[in-house]
Every structure is written in structure tokens, then in C-alpha cells.
Length: 486
Ligand SMILES: Cc1ncc(COP(=O)(O)O)c(C=O)c1O
Image 1: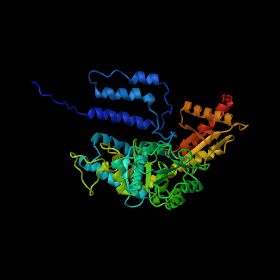
Image 2: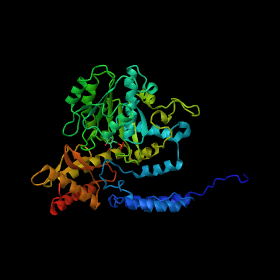
Image 3: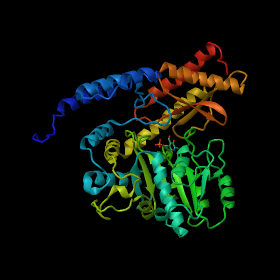
Image 4: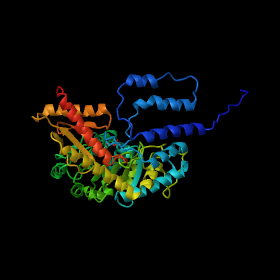
């Protein structure tokens, strides 16, 4: 070969400047943007799924075309009128830090690959342990979401309870291991089952303690469940802080006291969004006693309003945490030991995105006061929407609104369950077809319901009034045009 290959290095400036323009235009427009979810997959495919080009294309054209062609399929979930699932937006500083994260393109697995990413995680970890009222010395891992936070925490739990039983699960696996009993509430989130599935603990091999009408695990049911498990067996109990439908909290303090009668048992808390209740004196009572748990899972991409993907695992026993997560040592890696943080000790990833930067910027831009105000605003909005709905004839709120979730149902005059289900579903469809706000459906205790979930930093009183008016007007329209067939 005569010609030596040379990499071409073009100035990225024009491309990034154009991208910043497009992103800025989107973010400025998102509060007013419609919330219709594009249903025509054929047109999206026609625009986006092309043959792989033989030759590379011009980057600015690619980005302009992507912004144009993806737009119909982009859901305005970053905006303040989105109340679907439990999806937060992103505070501007965290979006900007996330851009920098991609720009720097750090591999945040090892200190040696990015000292800054490692130290920023230390700052974020310390701030959050303080903010969420967790015990000093708690270890933490920044993961992709609450699903992986459960995985991380329950892997630490699996390590600890089997170590007590004389079994090294990381080295020997589960074949031949002592059995582990896992207790869940009847309304545990599906991702807890997902984590048990991935960990070989079996998502159906669990003891389920019944929940009450709000979705809280009942204390007497937990006691009876524990009584039925022979003493001395490895035991993990999963509690919930914030039910995805009702926002309700298990009675955490008394439950932890109960479990503590079983030496060596591990208590895990799912606080995907509910953990943030701790930051306000108005809602902190919901988490009384939570600092007595062994592990906690939460999200930053929900109520902290950090871009996807961003979750957090906290473990009160750093040794168990690291034992469960750290992969076998590899000769080619430069580890730093205990004085500095190699992130791969704490997460089920090796190479990974430097998620800490976006959290760092969100926390600095909000401050302790800003986080508290954001959570309190979300709770206020949920309460206001619930009040407006409850005041309207034929409309009910199915849950006690203790946090940021509201469950709405419409009843027909004869209160026929099937007809009321149909009215509720048709109302939701009318709301989704209109696109002023976006809400999602659920079934609560065999009743169709509409979920209103408030977790966007930009949602305030104006959006609360708009949401309530939109919901009630949609129900009126459905009633006026005659009931849909069940
Ligand atoms: C209570 C609860 N746990 C876990 C999850 C899963 O979180 P993620 O989607 O971040 O994995 C959710 C999501 O809404 C949730 O509400």
C-alpha cells in the first residue's frame, strides 16, 4: 500500500451550532406543542427506515432531516402538559450537561478513564444521601433507571442473605444454593418482579402480602406472611414508597420494625418517584423509618427532571453492594483502590455513560430549595386537579391523593360498572385525540381509570386548571354524543 490512510477531521462547529439551534427551537416550543401520539407507523417507517447508504452523507443534512422526519413521532413528554406514566422532563441545566456528556464521551467505568466523571458521581452521591435522608456511609450506583436500581439492590441483598447462609453466590451461582424467600406487597411494581427474574430468584416464587384499597401492603398481611416462613431462612422483603397508580406508601417504619425481628433479613424499598417525598416537610412523614432499610431504588429521570436514562441504587452495606456488582478483575484495567471511585464496582455495567454530569447540573441548578419546591408543586398540582374533578358531577377520584398521582373515573348515572368503564375509556380516548394534555389508562381494582401523574418541573397552577378542564370537557363531550358501546 503506497498511500497511508489518513483520518479526516472536519470542524464540528457548524454541525453542533445547527444542532443547538434545532434543539433550542424544540425546547422553546415544547410547552406549547401538541401532545398527540403519532399512530401512523407506516409514515414514520417510510420517512426513517431507508436503505443503509453506501456512502456517508453530510452530517448537517442528516441532523436536519432527522429532526424533520422524527418530529411526528416525538412525544412532547418533556413539556409541562404531559401527565402520562411517570415521566419527568429535564431542567435546562441538566439538558446542557447531558450535551456536554456526549461531547466529552467519557467512559465512566473507571477513575482512570475519566477522573472528572468519577468525582462528580461522588458529589452527586453525597448530596443525594443527604437530601433523601439515607444513613451516612451508604453506597450508591448511578444506573439507567429504577429497573436496574432494583437489580443492583436486590443483587446486593442476594449476596448478603446467602453469605449469612455460608454461600458465595457470585462465585458459585444459584445452583445448589440455599433457598431465598422473597416477600412483596400485592401492588409491587412490575420492575421488582423483573429484577427477581433477572437475578434467578424467580418473579413468581415470591410470597405476596395483600395490599389495602390504596395499594399499601397491609401490616397484618406482612406479619402473617413472615410467620409462615420458617425462621432462619434467607429472607428479602420489598417495600414500596409510591404506588404507580395511587402514589400510596407502605407503612414503612412499622414494617421495617417487623422484619427486624428476623435477624439477617434484608429490606429493600422501591421509591422510584416516592423517595423524593423525603425532601419536603409536607410529605416526609410518608417515609418515616425508611432510613432503617438496607437498600433503596429511585429515579432521577422522573421527579428530579434529569434526561433519560438516569436511576439510582443506594445500599446501606457497601461491602455487599460491591461484592454483588464488581466484575472479576481484568489484567489490562487500571484500578484505583479505595481512595477513589471506580464506578464499575457499584453498577451492573462495565463501559458506561457518565450519568453523573446531568444529575450534578440538575441538583446545582435547583438547590435543596428548588428540589423541595418542585416536589411540593407537583403535589399541589395533583391535589388541585383532584379537587376540580371531585367537584364535578359523575366524576370520582379513586385514590387518596397523598403525593403526585390522581386516579380519575367517570360514572354513568346508573353507576353501571361496565358502562362507567366504557365512559372512562372513551373520555381518555377523547383527551388523547385532542392533544392538549396527555394521560394514560389503568385498571384499578377492576375499574377502568385515567391516571394523572405530575412530575414535570414546568407544571404549575395554570397546567393544573387546564388539565382538570380538559378532562371534564372530554367527559362532557363523550356524554353528549351518547355512550360508546361497552
Ligand atoms: C414505583 C415504580 N417502581 C419502578 C418503576 C420503574 O422505573 P424505571 O422505568 O425507571 O425503570 C416505576 C416506573 O414508573 C415505578 O413507578
